[in-house]
Structure formats: structure tokens, C-alpha cells
Amino acid sequence: MDNIRFDRIRRELKYEGNRLKFYEDTYEMPDGNKAYYDYIENRDGAAVLPVDSDGKLLFVKQYRPALDGESIELPAGSLEYEDEDFMSCAAREAEEETGMIPGKLIYVSDVYPLTAFVKEKTKVYIGLDLKKGEIHRDETEFINVVKLTLDEALNMIETGKITDSKTIIAIFAYNNLIISKKL
View 1 (cartoon, rainbow, N blue to C red):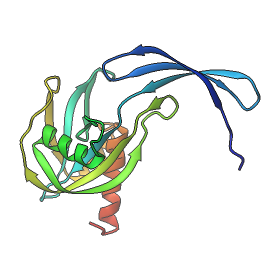
View 2 (view 1 turned 120 degrees about the vertical axis):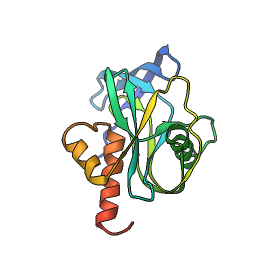
View 3 (view 1 turned 90 degrees about the vertical axis):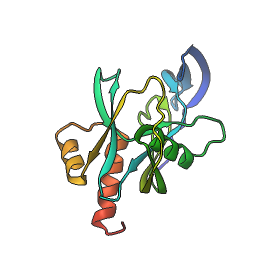
View 4 (view 1 turned 30 degrees about the horizontal axis):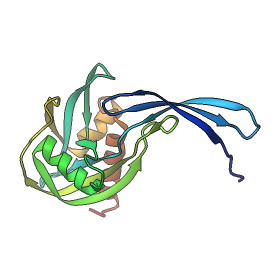
């Protein structure tokens, strides 16, 4: 298959917020015509599915303005400084949001939530061998920790109660590891 090449000829910053930068890109398409794309840049981050010694999966339930409602998700967040590694970020977020520190992290996947116009990568992990840490959430985070069995989590995906893509990916990956007896 031949590579399809789009050449960016201009990027214009339209707005810069607290976390996001919004751009308008101009591209020359393979046929020579121009196309205009919106482009959003966000910091990369990490997410983790903590699993306790009883096999319960730990999630966070929090209000999400984009949904105008609550969402059940993995503990997750952005890299906080330039040289922070993804595994440290995942462990930090697990402790900050659930009070549990994973002793072992198993890499699942890189997730790009909206590849059509958002530059953001989240590395997803499964966290095992949890030990007690301390919850220390950001001042804007009002979170409840939710513990579910794997079957309950899978059912919540089927019934539309868990809709976050990185969370669904982690649950399915964990289920596959259990089925294949790799955990």
C-alpha cells in the first residue's frame, strides 16, 4: 500500500488554555488541494487499573463537565514535569486518587482518544500488589473510589455505565489476562 502524504504548510495557534492549545492547520493534500484541520494539543499521561488482593478492581467516580454527569474511570492524569516517566505517573495517580500504590505495573496499551484532531497519548497499565498510600487529590477533584468485581465491570460496559475508552481497554485487557491465565 502506498503512503498517503499530507504536507502541513501552516499551523496557527488560535487559543491557549490552562492545559490545551487549539490550532488551525493548513495542509496540502496529495491531489494538490488545500485542507484545513482543527488540531488540539494536550499533555500526555498515564492511567492504571488497580487490582487489590481480593481481585477487586478500583475505579474513580467523578463529575465530568463534557458529559454533564459522572463517569466511572481509571485513576489517570497528565505527566506533571518534562522528564516524568509514564509508569511513575500511573503510580502517582493511583495513590493520589485511590490511596493505593501499585507495586507492579503491567503495560496494556497506548491510547489516543481522538486521533482525528487531538494530540494526546495515554499509556494504560494494570496495577497489582497494592499497598496503602495516602490520598492527596487536586483541589478540583471530588472523587469517590468504586470497587468492582471483573464481572460487575464487564456488565457496566455492556449496560453503558462505563463508557470511558481507556477504562474499557484496561478492563478487557485484564479480562484477557485472566482468561489466558497470564495473571
